Amino acid sequence: EAGVAQSPRYKIIEKRQSVAFWCNPISGHATLYWYQQILGQGPKLLIQFQNNGVVDDSQLPKDRFSAERLKGVDSTLKIQPAKLEDSAVYLCASRDPHRASYNEQFFGPGTRLTVL
Amino acid sequence: AQRVTQPEKLLSVFKGAPVELKCNYSYSGSPELFWYVQYSRQRLQLLLRHISRESIKGFTADLNKGETSFHLKKPFAQEEDSAMYYCALSGKSQAGTALIFGKGTTLSVSS
Image (cartoon, rainbow over all chains, first blue to last red; front, side):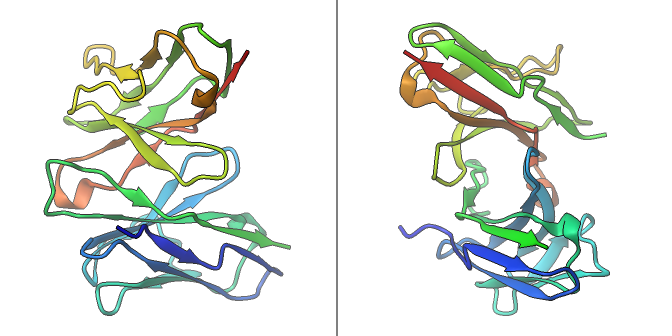
């Protein structure tokens, strides 16, 4: 089966600009996650979707970050305006909640964002 | 507070030596524990889960609830084991399935 797809792979912007990332999960995976991984740290959850509904966005900086999954498949994550501290790798992951006994998340390759 | 601690940033061993990557956790309840691995230029992938109690690529990990630890072990390291290893936990409810990761340990195996 095809894995989780993300684009772009790399993005360089200046502070105060806007940026958007796209994720296409594995077909049939209703649960989708966005993680932020700052250099030297482990990934940290930003938002979790179940189909097109938000399950957990408690760690999403909502003054500048937004995410949507309108049709319950693809998702976009937006930052507006970007700050220097947003430089990180943004990881998308998906999971099949119907296989609850096999709680494995599948990760995309990530988008490396550099804010200058 | 829910937290995963990996005390070693880097672990360097020689080929054939035993390996132990340490992981301690803090969680109210009964979490699921995982080890994820990222090889050079590859995406993050699951290595093993405590529920499965299996050995993957010669690695095992035992959940010790008394010590709140989930250390990853391999008796004889191979050069292809060189990678970044992350310990992670998740809850079991629908809302709690997001992973909480440690900072990771780089394992370097040299000949």
